[in-house]
Length: 185
Ligand SMILES: *[C@@H]1O[C@H](CO)[C@@H](O)[C@H](O)[C@H]1NC(C)=O
Ligand SMILES: *[C@@H]1O[C@H](CO)[C@@H](O)[C@H](O)[C@H]1NC(C)=O
Image (cartoon, rainbow, N blue to C red; front, side):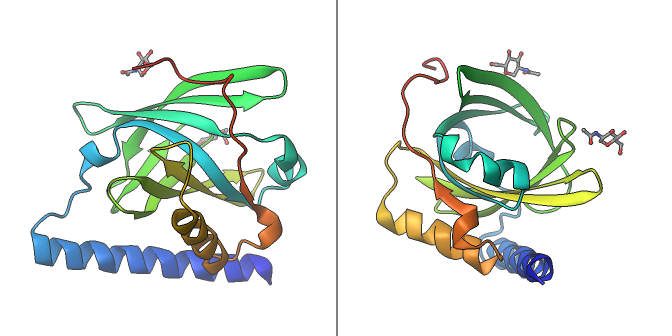
């Protein structure tokens, strides 16, 4: 039941995005995502996940960092610094456009990511979908330019997560941390 709700919610969300993209294209004559707006340094300050593995360790998770570089061919080179108990995981992955609006794919973990909401300035909300052992897992992440997120953006994230079938137990705000960071750019 919950899975069905989630799938329907996601389908609806994708539809809304596509319609918004079409409207935007018609009104503004710009169909492509403005990649400059997603480039640079971000803090991952909230997330929602339906993965059991994540839900089990959610109390240990803390704010992460990501830095997005748009490469010449339109690919994204995304570097992460993700704190884990006793360590700081740093790695980068190449994300390639799938051809669908605002959607990218990376071989690393066979993951598809889609931009679902942004104000083109201070935040973006990204949905990641991946298949693991025959299961489809979903993760919604709030990327913020600042370490502090305004209550408005935080509640926008929660609303969008719930609209997509994530329950309160699946949504969490990541506490700030200073130890695991990307180098200054
Ligand atoms: C991606 O970024 C990382 C970190 O800056 C860098 O080491 C790597 O060479 C970059 N890869 C490409 C293909 O640009
Ligand atoms: C990713 O997909 C490829 C081809 O579909 C498959 O061979 C590979 O095992 C998958 N990798 C992961 C981590 O699931």
